Length: 230
Image (cartoon, one colour):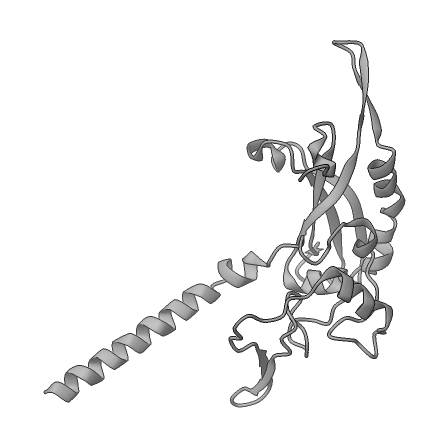
């Protein structure tokens, strides 16, 4: 972007990632690492050799995400505004490298937790748009929240989500938001720059299940058509 922060070749950007890791299958004790990667590194070394362990939460409960992330606020503000002095001994020169926390990635349960949203199976649980979803009963018992197709849904924005958070509490969410979140203080646009949960949306078998259902439906229709001919 013209006059953008990353137009300066000395500046860098970070992506963050977190998820819970149980220590033993029979125990509730686990830890939550918070990883950073530098986006300007080549892809082949970005995750293999240059991943930064920024923080670690350990305990028998999920982390208080706001408290956990807020501990990094001062460091990120210093890196963004003042930068870090790097000495280049080969040319006897010192440069200032500034950085910005630009993007993030996590699965839907962690996303709801770290953005202070209700979970995806709650009303207004979609962290991307304003669709409220519908609650459908399951046979023989229980229910599930589904999100029917909506053409051109209204997408959430960072500005309005901050406003919702300022007016919400855990007991009285506003549009699915339970309160402020720490990432809104250290990311330029925390709504647009946190990725979609590919793992549960694609890799977990949902797409395969949908394709199998569609293929089975087509086979059923074909069989009915052939039978009707004869």
